[in-house]
Length: 194
Image (cartoon, rainbow, N blue to C red; front, side, top):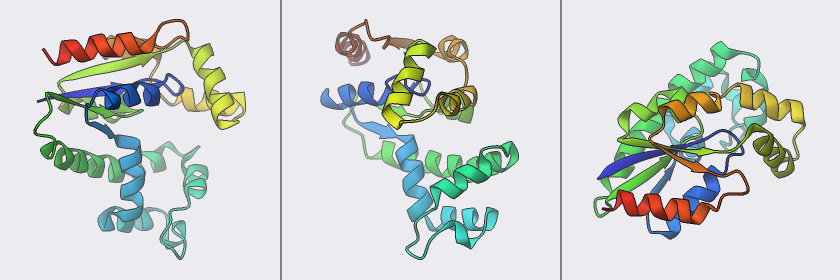
């Protein structure tokens, strides 16, 4: 079974593309969702996060205060790096367990916003990049999240550039608003299931 990574910049349309893969019957692992789940439910991860920040980072119901975490790591690259060294290995282990349950598939897709930045692409066979012009991505995220342009730009600046992602990719799906997505995904699906 092939392990295929799927990534792209914020607002590129990764979620839309993975929904198409799911409709085609392809198992999809969403690393960001898994990371959030682990931050709430994995005893080891929760313990390490409490040690990094303090017990008060979780409320009485065991819910992580994501806004507090974001404000703490936003301008602290070292703290963000320490958090990532807790979460990324846990997501990697969780992913490998999940892959073990997907024996019937010719391939699976692992979606992750920071697939390259985290280094997790090295355990995959191939990588798909969902590509869209920065202006289009910026407009999408502002509309979707009701964010300010500066906030979105800062998030974009924390990710690899489009050129860096494209240079490392095996496949490119163009989601510029003019190119039809479904035919691109179906063509890629057909190639991967040969």
